Each structure stands twice: as structure tokens, then as C-alpha cells.
Length: 179
Image (cartoon, rainbow, N blue to C red):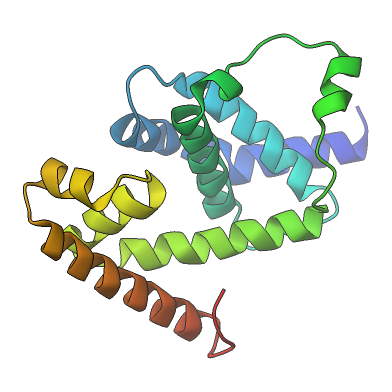
């Protein structure tokens, strides 16, 4: 076993493994029961370990949770595309997306982490409206019906939520502008 491999195993055991049960519970509480949480966990492990290569992660747990959330959202939004099927290496390479480098991917995921924190900082009703409309893509009418509120309330809460998220991101990034 190489030093790199044992170092990666140590990092994995210390940084990710202790949080697996929390991530598993979090995914089960937020996504439909038909979502295969085990597949999401495994796929997110792989993505985090690949992204870690050559990069120092400031917050591996947050990066891992964001990665798992994004994978779960992909599975929910695009179930036909997210279905796991066996592909041989040549088929996989046809679909491999090399458009983002590891630093760009890490940067994107850090920005998603800021956005997640911004949404989490919203008051409950506002957070529900923003999540349903912006994350799950429901129309204002669907959000209003689902939450039992008027469409005007949905519109107002969306305006407030988006404004607060932008303000949060500006403050979080030290006044350097929007994400």
C-alpha cells in the first residue's frame, strides 16, 4: 500500500466517515423514499475523493453534503438520466465532461455552500417558498397550493428571500459582490 493511498484512507476515515450517518439521515429526511440513499452516498464519496486530489478542502463535510445534495437533486429532477446502469469504460468516456477543472468544481461547490447557508438563514416560511420555487422548480401557483398560502404571499416571500440571499452572499464574501 502506498503512502498516498494510506493518507487518503486516513483522510477519508477522519473527514468523511464520521458524518455518514448524519448525511444518510439528512438525505432520507429531505428526499423521496424511492431515492437510493446508498447509491447517493457512494457516488458522493467518489466525487469528493476525486475533487480532493491536489486540492486542500477547507470544509470537507460541507463539500460532501453539498455534493450529495446535488446528486440527490439530479436523481429527483432527472430520474431517467440519474439511473445507475453499468457502462464499460469506452461508453463512460463518451459522456465524461471535462469542461470544469478541479479548482473550478471546488469553487462552484463552495459557492453552492454559500447559497445553501443563505437559504438556511431565511425564516421558515421564506425558506420553504424559496426552496420549492428555486430548487424544486415549482411554479408560484404550485408553491401556493402546496403551502396553503396565496400566490401574492409566494411572490413577496420569493422577492424577500432572493434579496436576503444576495445580501448574505455579499456579506459572506466580504463585500466582493454577488456569487
